[in-house]
Length: 218
Image (cartoon, rainbow, N blue to C red):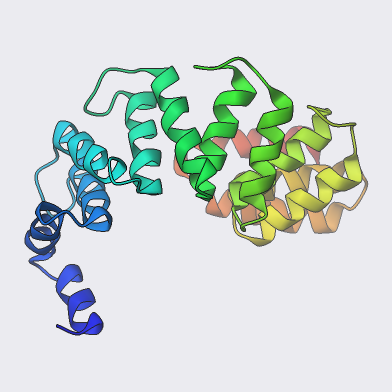
């Protein structure tokens, strides 16, 4: 079967069957894909416990996203009890393999000191590593570290630049942060444009809070 035909099969009505078969044959990518489907109930019955098992099989093969998703399961209690130190272990394994999402997730744990001793300097290093790969959420957090002076000197210009990169990448929080700093520096017309974009792209529960916060800034 050609790659094009395989991709079409995996996107079709029988995607669950194809992916399940590939996972049973030991294909780590398929195991991770199956795990995600089982978590979401996408094309298969939702089953977090089976999802956890699928991620574990992929991680046992050294698959970076398998480790990252195991970390998510341990952090959130998906198919397994919450275990923050284990989440950190799996995030670190995947982060060291270069996976941007794992670097971002590990940085969050380090920044908050959940499951690991708080270490803002190491958190900033991992946020930067993810941001350097184009991870827009990590870009926003690098900006926040510069704005707040977390593990680095306070640098509003650097914060503004990182927020801009995140905003241009389409991340609603980075967009809102960028607009906020623009407003605080008197660039109201630019700020209004980015505020509008942030609110339009934010998920519904966040939208109202952003509107309220915007009123206190602009």
